[in-house]
Length: 172
Image 1 (tube, rainbow, N blue to C red):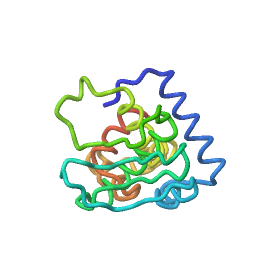
Image 2 (cartoon, one colour):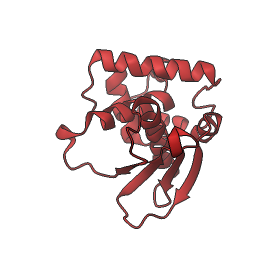
Image 3 (cartoon, one colour):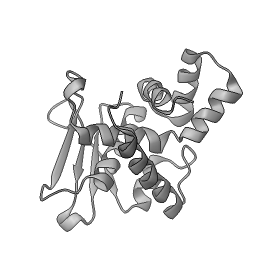
């Protein structure tokens, strides 16, 4: 669950709105792969030496021609989230002279999670699962919570944990 304040959430939501309008993105109809390509980001599926690596963002030389690497060990749903998460870092967090950003599967201490990771997580979930669509599905379907999570996970092609957190964030 994100520990972001309303101002951070509003700032990220505005960036996503602008991104969607400028690039004619409409999730889930637009795949995250198409979105990355429209932003000039190259994608690679990689075998990392360490199994706990989810993704790597190469900001590129002088912030040009960025590349996102995702783990071949992860499911498509997890890779989709990782790609969106890394796009979040690219748009929200300038590289500050660092060329590579490595993200790991690390859920051990969520209370001290870096704020940049929280923002990138929120960005990814909000980009891939637009609030108005989640609310519409919830309202029209009248499904029980677990059925709603399962349905939305398949519909948006993200993990169940992403949907469970998203439902808490948007609180329709």
